[in-house]
Length: 93
Image 1: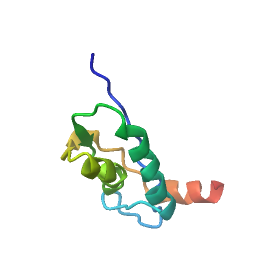
Image 2: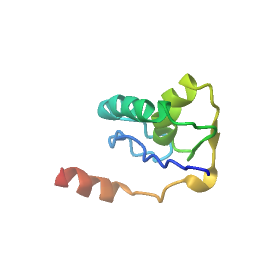
Image 3: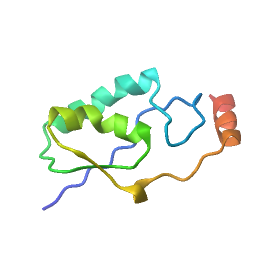
Image 4: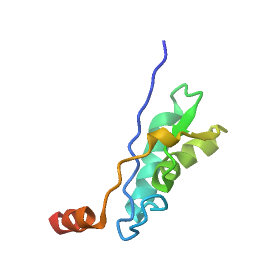
């Protein structure tokens, strides 16, 4: 049986408004370690990611530790979030 683990990217830096290159926040950089810890004892053969930097960066430590190449899947991209939505989100937080 095949098991699939879906991982949502760690917290991004919302100050960067370029969707494709938005990196992880400091918290996101810490949280990706939790992702790695969770996945390390799983029998994972393939690592797939959306093309967004925050998604790749979230899984990069795991992929490096397990010597797996991250395969970028363009169709895994997220919907576009405009700056108005980000401003509303930041006001809510």
